[in-house]
Length: 47
Image 1 (cartoon, rainbow, N blue to C red):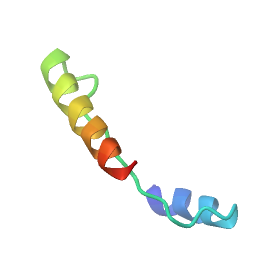
Image 2: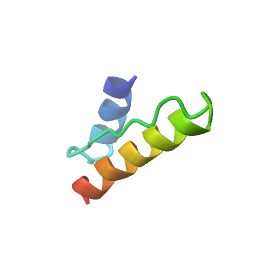
Image 3: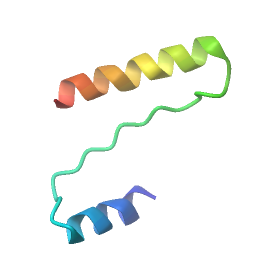
């Protein structure tokens, strides 16, 4: 899926694209909180 999105964004001129995944958000409070924190940490490293 991300290859398709990267292609579309590249067509629009956005070539330096990073993907951050937040998974298991519907698997209960604890896994959701852990994965959300992991995704936010990844985002803070990119910005």
